[in-house]
Length: 320
Ligand code: UDP
Ligand code: MG
Image 1 (cartoon, rainbow, N blue to C red):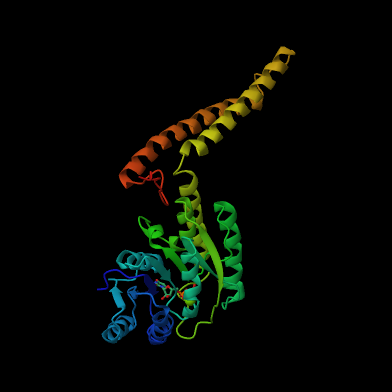
Image 2 (cartoon, rainbow, N blue to C red):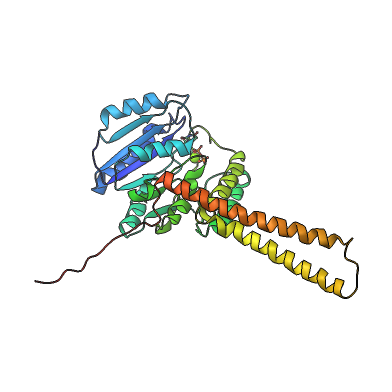
């Protein structure tokens, strides 16, 4: 196997037997003149067609090809994670196996990494997919993800992306999380940018996804938001709510006290119950925050997750 290369191209493959020969040809045409050592990692995600066999046959003639055959269909994210784990490139590029991404765009992305970015995401500014079922939900999702996470990209869903290798180490991917890699990388301090890329209509086979994926993506968005906020400081989430509730209870009680001093009977006021409820809720939320802090310490320790990451270090040297 290729020990250490400059560039790894990772492609998840699920029932793409017809596209595969074209894909590999187009990729080689772009990669060979690039003057970088490269490997082409094709991850067969338990295809039920002949993709595995096609990959094996192609590997006879192409020394740069690395085939990974998963035991069953795990989904695109898991297939990509398998590709990341096996690839040795300093730069990792991902794209889809259905020829919708144009390999000719790869040098664009790689140059951006060379410019100093850690993650470069493709933007399919002229996306060739169904408008109502695909493009519209994506547009909404992209806006929402940008707002919630603070990482504003036009096109999270574009598989054509390039990563500096460090960005991908220690990433624990599951579900549909591959599309949130820019968010996860941003949490670790990555420099991120977007470049416009070509997008082509699917030629062979059909899309593996429908509108149901939008729901899963939204649920993953909640998870990522939670990871972003909660995993750093639970107390900031729950403690804030707790203190708000306690302040609310205090103000309500004060109001009740004043009108009691003015001679009113407050014994049967619903507001009294409201004040009590707020007080109890506030204390409980605060308690959740404290418990969360304890929990998160254990979590970080079990994951060996550092609390900081260094990009570079310099040391001055005394002239002698
Ligand atoms: N894919 C995969 N496992 C799956 C579903 C899809 O590896 O369970 C691959 C698929 O072969 C393709 C990429 O993921 O290379 C994106 O899939 P698709 O083109 O169907 O998605 P779309 O472009 O419609 O979003
Ligand atoms: Mg596609």
